[in-house]
Image (cartoon, rainbow, N blue to C red; front, side):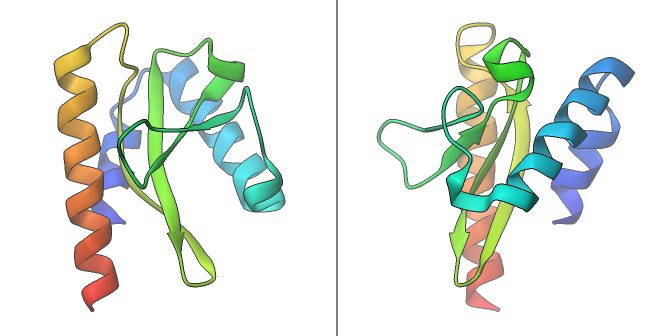
Length: 102
């Protein structure tokens, strides 16, 4: 998704590399990738990808759509920035829903 790619591009370099590494693990392992690398977001159909085994301040929000795992947004983790987390979660839900309707 283009907007998630833009969000990835503006992360600090070390965080971007950690996110890319986590995304590669997700691509290879899919739903087999478990905690602490990923977890279900409470009250949502989305999961959060947690770079550096959860020690990163950034998350990628995704869910399965057919055979694909679709990343809808990249945003801050909840403890560091609750409002930013909520905004990223909402954006991911909307973007993935739009992707699925096409």
